[in-house]
Image (cartoon, rainbow, N blue to C red; front, side, top):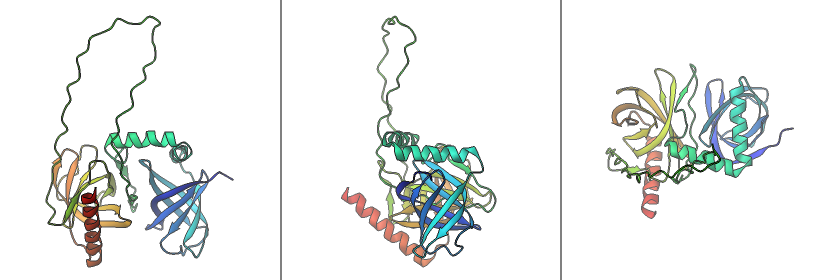
Length: 287
């Protein structure tokens, strides 16, 4: 039996027959995982599923088969690896869980990249579902580690005079008004999100920069070429609540940040979003 490692507050989805079931991952191993759903998994054992997990900037999509399901909403899944890539990704995640030093290096790389994944575009097959990002935790922007250069010769080279680097000021953050009730993501935090393009069934990972009741700004970390007036869904999780909101791309704030205007929204979802924004505003003021 493979060793299992706890995942703490890791969130993701259990995909069954095209349905996206939000869940919390309890533990994981090379052979499978144990997760917790909001409601009991009615399909029970021997159901073909796919688990989607986002951790340390990696998006894991692994097919599997349920082994058991309990009345207290726990589900056991045995992994079935169709490609070596999923095995390598899973091995990388377990390495992060075993060695905290490796995990910190991964977090630094993700923070320096300015996005939640190194490759922001995740090609989705037809009827595939987007990954709901986990609730974010503050990610400090740390300095990059110094490069260690190997010695190429025994003799020490003559000193070379190099000019001091001239600091370049970061471009100012562009702000869009999303109504009187809106909040900006602090510079030392990250609010992960996924843009789901309804027409092309493509998922684009990024981070929310500004959020309001009328819309949001999403930074993708790469050149955005999606265009304007494109129907999308914005998926994110804040303050423990998952959101999947319909919208349309409105304008480009810069080369990698797009303005999303929300479309129809239920009364309940609008009240939940309003509550989350109020809590984020209070947290920002307190800090």
